[in-house]
Length: 559
Ligand SMILES: O=c1[nH]cnc2c1ncn2[C@@H]1O[C@H](CO)[C@@H](O)[C@H]1O
Image (cartoon, rainbow, N blue to C red):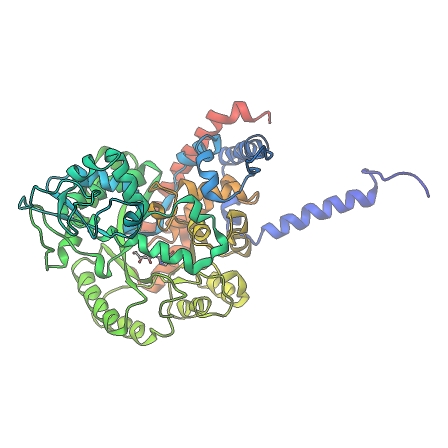
């Protein structure tokens, strides 16, 4: 036996060089590779600083040993437990500040926290609530359903509480009165509404109960939301609050999934739904324009919103066809607001896309005959399965030329599809917190996002149903935070690429398939609307990176 291990030995040094090369080679396949290559010196500096901030907080803030009865804490732990700690971090402040581009995957009735909606309702003249039974016990509160409505003042005044045994089921009580008289007052009333419309942390973490169980709870949360966002004055304030919150979070464009049976409106001073289905669309057009003209809308350069018409895949053929006909009419009347088409609700239990092939082919033929551009933006692969019908939806989605895939959680199991998705420029709308709470990944560390990026799959981050699933804010900051927190390979530059992708795959205006692909290929170098918006974001990104360097450079440079 001779000598000692020596770090300066030729073979050791060779190994370390090979290692660097191999890691670098691996990274050239990443979807964010080109974006990283083109970072300005300031952006590179910001990336390094944020890396230092992140590591410092992983070591000194998140890593906390278990003490009597308390769990051990760690970076990347389940979102519902991490959430209260996130807002104390510097990394959070950085993420909040970041320009995030477009929110491409979110369902309207679960976009704005219900506390905000209920407060709007309480303040709106003539809003009433009725419950299916007196809410005087915990059991009753759990079992009851409730409905909001507008009433022109003809209600009986004998009932002023919904949480006493004397309450007569289905009687309307002014919301303001019911809330004020609720045991515990308005705060307790809001808590009650939230208990019926949100998934609490203690439920979210129970992964042992599986996907179907959480989907039953999740789906039930949507029940009361229909009647919340129907009365015009409420709807208008809802949109203004929503757009304010999105813009304040650095989001400049949003594609909202809704429609189907949801697009109904009760006009100011009315009690009944307007049979003219355009009414709902008119209001949204007006509110988008109104917000864009506000100080905040202008200062944040808010670009607007479009709607992805969404039908519940659980519906029978006839009602899907009927809804498609209504969709075609709306597209004719509101070509700019109407973006595309999707099918929603639990994929595992609803109709697979292959089952709906006749309807989807027919719909495409109809829109072509009418000279309408209605691309597909399908949910697909939101499953743990491999080869089950939800997983196979990915194949149909690609064959139907989906322009983006919602979730695509199981895509990483399909090498050939991955190749096709990359070649055909299809982007995956990744919703990390939604996937976690709906029990696909136990925590962010188990999410396939880094695998998708590493394989070169275009991805962007969305929040899906933040009012229900626990983010409890309209913006994207928590989902962005989870992504950067969990994976060393992402970093600020990786988040930047994800944000820029969101604009590159945003459906700003009707385009033929060819033009759509060309604009994605050209990205910031194109000459159309999309390139202009990406260039706008690039400028915001530089300003943001400079802010990071100025604000945190001095302190974190040394770390
Ligand atoms: O992650 C999702 N995957 C599929 N469908 C969803 C998801 N989140 C919400 N919805 C569906 O959208 C409808 C409201 O517009 C709800 O019925 C819900 O099932």
